[in-house]
Image (cartoon, rainbow over all chains, first blue to last red; front, side, top):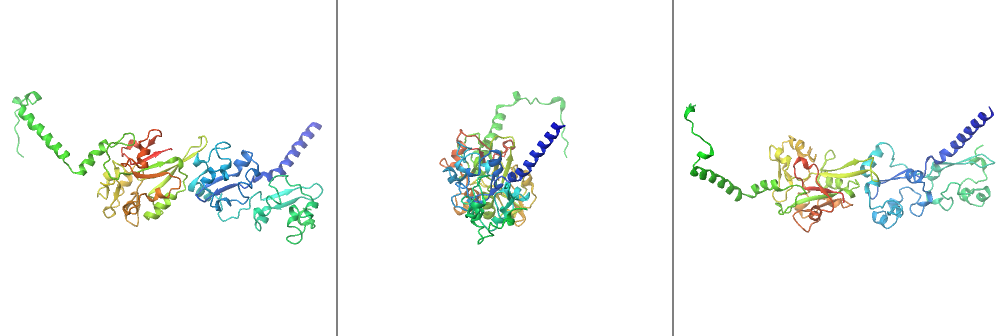
Amino acid sequence: MKRLRFSLLLILAITAVLQVAGPLYADSGGGDIYYTKPVKSVLFSHKLHVEDLGLGCDMCHTKLFEMQALAAQERPDFTMKSLYAGKYCGACHNGKMAFASNTQCARCHGGVKEYDDALKQGKIDPNAKRSGGPKSLVYKPKDIGKVTFSHEFHTAAFTCKDCHNKVFRMKKGGNKMTMDAMNAGKFCGKCHDGKTATAVTDCAKCHAQ
Amino acid sequence: MKKVKIDFDNLKNENPDTITSMERREFLKIGLVVTGVFAGGSLLSAISHIDKVFASSEEMKEKYPYKPHYSMVLRQNNCIDCERCVVACNQTNEVPDYGYRTRILQRDAPDAIGMKREFIPVLCNQCNNPPCVRACPTKATTKDETTGIIMMHYHKCIGCKTCVEACPYNARYFNEEKHAIDKCNFCYDTRLSKGEKLTACAAACPAGVRIFGDLSDPSSEVYRLVHQIEHPVWVLRPEVGAKPNVFYMKF
């Protein structure tokens, strides 16, 4: 009887942990990115690179690619020639770390057909503002209610560069945040100083009861 | 009708042994006359015989009947379905959105390693043995004697669409505005006859997929690609016997 109760509790505990951890990883990086310039189109899958291949965010961000999705295609040097010279995707797709970017063209280039299919299936909304990153992040401090940070809300007013990487590192658990640090103007405190946005001294504003 | 009386009992033996040498000479002279007509015949009859010897890319050719012999090589490896060629063609040749002069086909190979799809541009192959020209009841479509391009004469077209059925490459469509069948003509009227060296699609391709040129010119890229043996070159549906002038390679 005791052993049964123990194993049941264990299963419950694991499930509880998974409930919290799950949503944090649900949106690994920025999802599917459909490049349409200079040619339509190339599909970059964050899932493939982050989840399946296990690459960390800082492998590409921000030295190779800005945080802002599709920012790269606005630049005039976003060409195959740049890739062959080791820029953008070419930093890894050089034949050594991954297949060379001058081979297997149709592996990344899905063309007009792939783009139109995705459009029809509702996978792309050309008008949507890309918020990037997980929609919301949940922080659970030990001694006070949890904090839910909304990426969606904040990216409506700011660009990725405003926080990443100088204010917040793009790494899970990579930001050791304390209220003291915030009061000193670090992390959330950079803007939440009472002037730009609500001061961090207003506990209930962020911490759930 | 006059009734011919046949004397069945006294029929003359007509086997080769009973033919006199004079009769044989008369018979052979007929053959000489016929050959003479062919030998001294017009360019048209020469072309009609060329298609007996003019095979697809497998055979090396010593003489090309057309000057320039317009031809296209499609280097499939580089095709990324950006469809800039389709857009350029539609703009240059006023192709309506329900029709097409060129298309990009996609072939999926889900079990392949690495790349799992390929793109294949298709267009009118300007065949040397064109089924469409054979099918047309009004000679609205003909093979040009100088360039080898299959031309359309819109005013003669009655819209019967037999050529659409006949074409093994699905290259033709009915154009409502012109009230006639339309198809790729290598931009002859819109570009080549005006001094341009390339078709609109070949000029628009950013990846070097469409190589257009004169197959009879040994210094041209199409000549070099079609006549090399390091990389295989093929044509679509060779079993149909249309002997196309558009070649494909994965190089």
